[in-house]
Length: 256
Image (tube, rainbow, N blue to C red):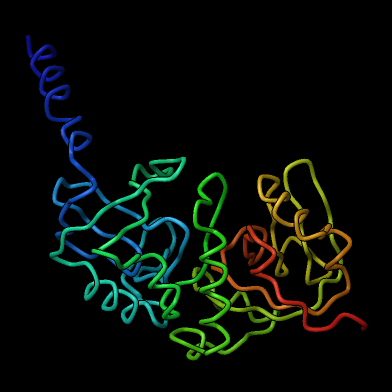
């Protein structure tokens, strides 16, 4: 009898959030620069962008340890959406691996994801198949970087040998690609002699077409070049940045 009761409860209330009209729903809490809680209890992650983290992973847990510009990003997001009714627009994937909603958010005519990029509060983080606004996002980030807005004016470019000191932080890393390698599912741009501990740029197969459209074969094009790459530095066989678009990489020299 209890099992029947809980099944009915789940069917009635567990799916309640899906009955909400996401064309007009209230944001009740801003969690960080790119994540909010909606009035139906759902956590919504802004798709296509990334902002500095408030927490840092230590061992198996997370501790409050804001990255540079994380508090500013949260506060800017709070001023834009907290306590307001928003329209949420979805792309191909509605949820991420953590069960959070993935969406583009609008307050009136203000496109929040785009606004955060435009003001340099966020960086581009677009992965297929969620690429509906990728061209707009690339344009806005390029402009914000040129004008040194937000984090673009606050962060110094770091060397590839320094990347390990900035795990889980958004940074622009500069260095020479010493070797490249294409596996079945990834392309690796290696900045050191030992790929198991030195800085690496990773390009997954589902994003290769974006490079192909620009006439770029990453294995050949970036080898031996001095480049700058922007994104969140993660740790896997040493520090790495996952790149989805050629616009995340700037070639500093072409002849050396």
